[in-house]
Amino acid sequence: MRNTISLRIADFLKSYPPFHLLEQEELKSIAEEITVQYNYKGEHLFKQEDPCKPYFYLIQQGAVEIYQNENGKEITLDQCDEGDLFGLRPLFAGKHYSISAKTLEESIFYLIPIQAFKPITVNNPKVSEYLLSSLASNTHTPYYTESPSRGNLDLTSDIHELQTVHYNKKLISCSKDTTIKDLAGLMNLHSVGSVVILEDGKPTGIVTDKDIRVKVASGNWDIQMPVKEIMNSPVICYPASLTASQAHLAMMKHRISHICITEDGTPNSNALGIVAEHDLIVSQGNNPYFLMKALLRAKKTKDLKKIRRNITALLEQYIKSNIPMTHISRVMFELNDATIKKCIALSIKKMNTPPPCKFAWMSLGSQGRKEQLLLTDQDNAIVFEDQDEASYPDIHTYFMELAKNVNKRLLKIGFDYCPADMMAGNPKWCLSLSQWKEQFSDWVKSPIDDHILLCQVFFDYDISYGELNLVNALADHIFKVTSDLPIFKANLARSALLNPSPMGFFRQFLLETNGEYKDFFDLKKRALIPITDAARVLILEHQVKNINNTFERYEKLAELEPQNRELYLSASYATKVLLKFRTRQGLMHGDSGRFIDLKSLSKEEKVKLKRCFNTIGDLQDLIKLRYKLVNLI
Image (cartoon, rainbow, N blue to C red; front, side, top):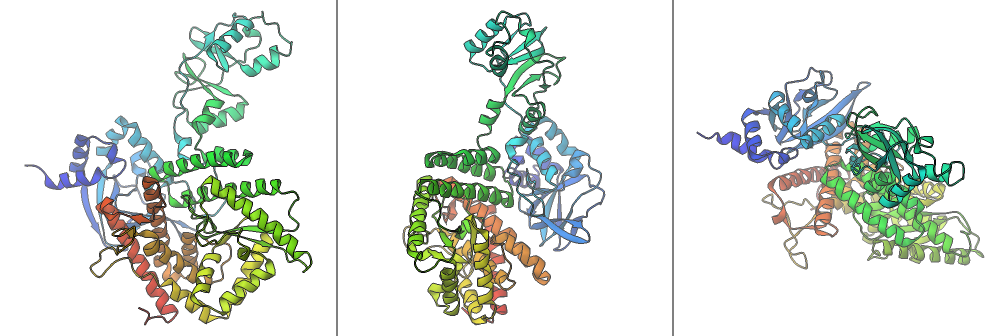
């Protein structure tokens, strides 16, 4: 008789990595060994320093918090839900868990025995790579390298760094007695930058095009001399398992531009091929480190447009590889920010004179929150130093011309103009510091709907270029004028509740009823805006400066309001899920990812979205109570 339970398990497994890499028979054999376990909310599956269990976990239904204890404090590392793996340490001979895991709600788990799964990792390198990457992070998410601390972002951290290098197997070689002239002829004939000197198939030396330039073209060595006189020896060798990061480090350490690949990674075995620094750089065109270098070197807007295509390719690679949203948003923010900085620098260079006074370019909206992943429209503004009345017109004219130039460059790169014209090229949003303060005071003291809307846009800003003190002065002013105005905060809270729960009475998605996107789900309006607006309202109460990112705001709120810690951490996680979901949809359909055809979603995707919507409902209930808006419908 067929085991229907194991068949259902196998059917579930094939929808999630790394099981999607397995053949059907492998899935069935694993499914037959799996144990199903049910846990109540708040139960620990294992704790830090517990002995490892002989299995790891796959969540069939529910959610789990992964955390570490540091100095008596629980530091949340991640939250897992349907289809996520965790507890992988015993698979790779770990003796004790370095993390803790407890359920956030009632959950069902598949317990996958180590001994049953281990042979598959041996026979399937891709599965092994996936699990090793997960282990390296101590979480369910592959290639997860982020830390709870908010240190500087390492832009060299990338999935590509973990992959083995592609080496050139067509090795051009010669003997040590070959003349320098003949060696140069070989390099020219095969269009290569190096030749390896072999003895019985083993590398004894290497000559590069740099050696020809420095040693021969300078006249120090005669071209009829044997290459053994100018070759570099011993040869730096590595095995074929060499990774991109290892190759970079080796080249920097030894100050070389070529690495020889041999059978055992030493000069004592046969040569297999060569890795050149140029080929390594080309192969990593989407590595954020090289993208950043390219942005810094860019001379024209068309250069930035080309780089932007590679940035989008990097984003797509991150999404497909299930990189944590925290890492994605930080990397994309840095690359977007560098793009904006370069546009401003190029525009200033084009002006006849340097800026007449100190100023700051502020990015607003999603870029101001470090959440702009896809190419969306621009939202920006300029603040400049206060000026005397006589010089103000000329200075304002200068910054208006600069702003329009920058806006035009960003448009050419792919960032559309803002439909509402909330851009620095609009005279309304290119103001002196005093004018901005007066503007914010007017909005706060007269909280009509239009002013509240403007506050929602302009309260989420981040400096992209210029004088930080100007931006900090604005932040201080905003906190000052809002601190004693409970009516303004109540109106801001009321505005945050204008978009109710995304679910209808029968727990069905609320769809658009007319227009171009009739019967589509508006992810931005129904989910992202409510959760973003809620974070803005709640963090304003604590007057926290320089944290504009939505999920970071919720993480900070979890510290400031421990009584609501669980809700805020769930909101942080939900924000990441929604952002990643929108990004994935946008990349898939070549648009903003805002409107979604629900028929294209899997059951698991719908379940994950609904869990996020529950959190939004809880946040709105909290806001209603806190700001005495309980009668608001």
